[in-house]
Length: 154
Length: 154
DNA sequence: CACTGTTTGTTCAAATTGGAACTGCCTGCT
DNA sequence: AGCAGGCAGTTCCAATTTGAACAAACAGTG
Image (cartoon, rainbow over all chains, first blue to last red; front, side, top):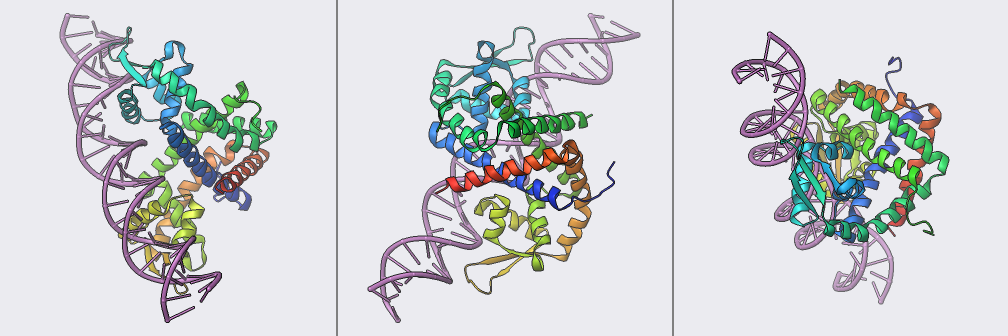
């Protein structure tokens, strides 16, 4: 299925644009969160998922998967967040191997303060930069990309 | 201009999908390049730009900008590549502050070996995952996002 | 129940990253 | 020419990240 070995001009242009812009975007978001709330983008992601989960709790692996972070990377970040008192770890009732991370009231409080600024920046740089149609297409596209990546690992 | 403080359901979904997928994509590409050619994705990017540049040369800052890497990050990577003999550094004729990085014949050789596999994976996971129209939207969209980021820094 | 293969998390070492500080050079003005 | 303000690269340091190796706990089978 790889008849054409190389990318044509516009494909290459699209790819380079994407790589550069997404790298930049990530850094800008990280910077804003850090100065604004003392959190990295990844840490914000962790707290956001926990805040949205029932009981503010999730198992480590589930968390790692939805965040696209490696297990060891997540362990590291959870330890950091625990030091700050934003998250706590507990045993899993149904599986002794499991560890359940839970966002603390302090963590929730921080999210309430951090979220508006972050969301606002995401809106300014991304959501409002695109038409609703473009955003749909983009969501579709990345969903397909993700499917291909996941499927590929087998 | 931020009348709506939060993201609606589909906006949020789109954003989460993008963040997760792009993180994953980046890691997969990195892994493939590493096992396949012993290069990180960033290093590949550096060599690719140099290979495409006149004389295989570029100034450090220009390189850093097109790659969306910080100056210190680039210095580090160039040092690594130099150790491998894939890149060399030289003085800039018109500006004594400047440093010019040049890809070596060995670097070109490595690129000839590494590029096909990388391009093929990018095609498989991204280019072929999208219709030409979707790819256009992606390019358009990220170009606009990048414009907003750059403009914002002033 | 014992046994084998898997799954979860953690720990460890090595690689990478980004920001701040610093040196040396360039530019515009006086 | 002499100076103030900026720019280009490097260095240094603290924070992250990842894969590999491990220990403990599960699950399925004979």
